[in-house]
Amino acid sequence: MPLRAMNDLVAHNASLADELSDAVMRVLNSGWYILGREVKAFEEAFAAYCGVPFAIGVANGTDALELALAGVGVGRGDRVALVANAGGYGTSAVNALGAVGVYVDVDLDTQLIDASALDRVLAGADIRAVIVTHLYGRLADMAELMAVADRHGVKVVEDCAQAHGASRDNRRAGSFGHVAAFSFYPTKNLGALGDAGAVVTGDAAIAERVGRLRQYGWDRKYHMTLAPARNSRLDEVQAAVLSVKLPHVDAWNARRIALASFYAEAITHPKVALPAVDGTSYVAHLYVVRTTDRDDLAAHLRAEGVPCEVHYPYPDHRQPAAGDRYAGVSLPTTEQLCAEVLTLPCYPEMSDADAEHVAAAVNRWGA
Image 1 (cartoon, rainbow, N blue to C red):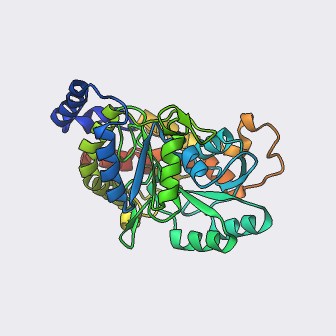
Image 2: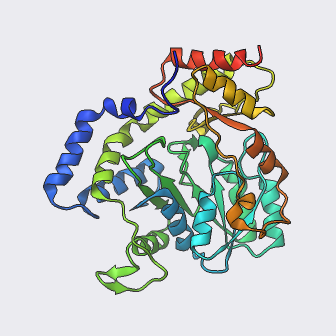
Image 3: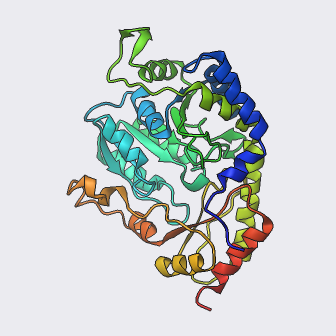
């Protein structure tokens, strides 16, 4: 039976409909809609979930990256190391600050930033910070990457937009770097009913700075002490919604991992490379396979009633908006991945029969 879409958000929210409705009505009836009790309660709960003392709610995940970078002192002209295969969100944040992106190639198997390549980049340029993106729900090897960054005196910003709840050695994504950014876009492992984000950190000074930067640079109302700042505030409705959903994230992640584990066993096509399923360090935000004939596989799957997408087809250093700025940059693994990756459906409300249909359709390709 065909799947309706890559994600079924109606089904995702249906089981919590009464609680979500109550949360929205609680905010409506409170008369307080910006930076009130709901935001404070969610910030405290999410910080505790991540295992850090501080969380600062903001308007969306890209703002969270920008404010996290600003929180560790990145400004105009500073260089920031980052990957180019993660959809451009890090690049957008770097550009918004007037900083300069320095791209680092990735590992073919994990599709995450390559520690050796990062070491070479940090040794060869004056870098202020590095964004470590936990792509597709896979937690990077933060012990190795923090050692590299520490050796060069570079601040680490974790991009956790796709890794809510991913953990290794009982530490969750967001608790390793100097600061971390989360998105709560509706399709995320923890998603709002619109745009929302957060910055988390264990550093009180960074938390205080980000808290001011998200609201005009105020230290008190109408008194601006930091620049450049912005208006980027998590609203009360989204905070209340996220508070309802947060206790369910681990169960949703477990279902995602179970589906990914099923795919790992059931998909046997010799032309399709599958991602490793590494327990809780991979929370399967996206289940991304690779093949050298992606367009043909995608057309076959859609004909079989299986939706699929490409995350992400255009490397940042080859985007038209970059002009010829990175014409001399070569990132062979990044460019290979952007030509080969294809995302299959993987979300908590998928049935076993749905997953079987997807796997069987992949295996029938070319038959």
